[in-house]
Image (cartoon, chains in turn cyan, blue):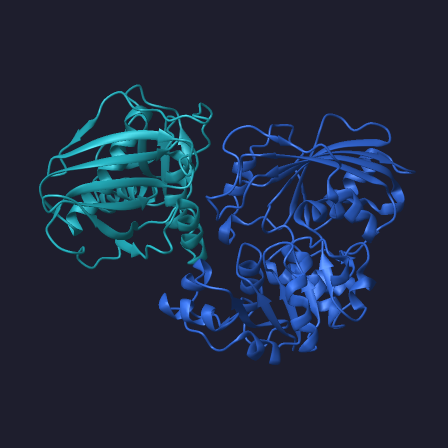
Length: 230
Length: 336
């Protein structure tokens, strides 16, 4: 096969800007294509030939998908015993694109709690707030260790520094990580609670989730057979 | 080589320090060090930069969070040719005496109000004021934006300027300041016009301001009456300025998007973005000015460092500053 490999997003998605930045990190542009009836689809092409594709969750399910991705990462490096619970503050605007539908001076409470398997049965409540910098996740559970296993995917930020997301976002920028940093940040130390449970705060952007969509797509395209034909 | 001490590493100080340390060893001017009053997010993110402590208590608190301290403020001043004071606004007077005792000239950022600290200077309007001995003050962010427009068109080609400044209620690194909803409407003219009068007596500039809940950058609505110049020609002058970006595609501008599309660190925008409103009149312009509330003054800071140390003309200083920051360099960056 000849021609340059490229990425394309068929259909509209609030994740579009994050996907475009993820593509740019790989030296590629994300082009737009006509949407499919089944919802937005991310495609890898060489010329006009489609090498691989995967669906992108519809906008109303993006919050769940992004949260699930971060939770799975956290629990992989820092597992808990038994069920855990989480409250997530989702940014209404910012790295996923400018919000044209609020909220302004309000919190959208979400229609129902999200029961997410993540292998460990985590009960999640997703709230949408007037915020643009990052997602904030409060995770409560019986952590199996005092701290997570060492990983560059889960990075602790000192508590004195992470007093709010303004300082946290500036810290990421100061370190040259940009506005959509890839690691999940652990904010300070766990707060001990009753019955061996603790609460820990984390923050993340859509970058990790966007990467998780693109990387398998590109890996699938490296094979000589494509998932589907153009 | 000019060694520059940067006092404070808030939103302005860290940008000045980064610009001075990012041009490579041997380039001029260079960062001598940063003086801090206590634990600092930027210092924690950049352990490679030399940090000095304002006093012993600051040194202890800095070391407690793992920041290496190379000495006290007097040690930094001893090796500096110039101080750029980026401390909290309206506090510069308290440090000015220390700089005088150490015989180090000082440039005060952030639109300091105390005239005893020295004259207000803009490299495009009154560069010679920077060469006088003693300290000097730089214009604030919004005043810098208006100054660039006036310098770009030419002060003698403008009859008057009327401007309404919509200011961010806080900086991007702060969460304990700023109104959550609504606008704060100031009942008196703002300082911007009066400050501009100190750097250029013409044209008369009248400014008012309101504060709104945003951090994505200030906005200014400006009505400019021209003198002896057609409006389309004035727009051409502005389009030719390396520190001005003309947005003339006739679509609304989302200020958060203007910031987000920047690939610079902190998503900085050093250029002023100018959006003409409607069709220009015969001798009148109506503009939106969108500016980075934190980065807009950095080019002028670098200009004035060079002017104050006598190492460059205004045009040379502007061209060198633009190169340091990666701004497209024009052959003529000075006032017209």
